[in-house]
Length: 281
Image (cartoon, rainbow, N blue to C red):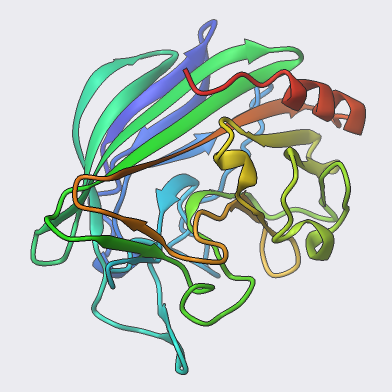
């Protein structure tokens, strides 16, 4: 695995970005951010966990792109459930427009197993100090590279309600008694599949807080994904209810901003940060 970029703030390493190209094919090889750390050094991502080895730190992934699995692991098939199939794609680094300590702009290709390009991607990541911690911006623009409409789906759109995962996903490390909350709900059942301006993950035992907020109007309408009981993970759901269909040459953009803080952040502080979140530049 090759490190493509390393994010640093005032000389402090906060994240590493690797290409993922040497991963087994059934994990849908792709670039991902791991480890991601607070300024105090606490790691707030997990990668290749035993329960879901296709979960890769902070990543962009979709389970159904025109029938190809870019998430990894078994594919959810309508009326059959999860099935292990030879349908995995891979996402390859195609070059940087710019790269430095504070972030990068990257070109990527979403390829089928035979090597056909379904999507091209422009991915942007930026890091900056923010309050008691630091802020990470992640934005992705996916463009249909074929001459036909492309369907971007999820297990939810293929018959498993509530499982609209896909898009921007953050796998968190194991935690003892973490809390997940939004402005109007607390706990996995209340937060998962809800639409709210922000989501906070609080790990009091490890002494860190992660807050997520959509970075543009469209991203803020995507329901949140939250898992606490089976494993620790949060993200946004691009295709929570209906698939996203891209015409030939069409594009879709999604973005998140993340605040990472050492210690426990209160609800009022999380809200104040999210309310001040600017749009994607």
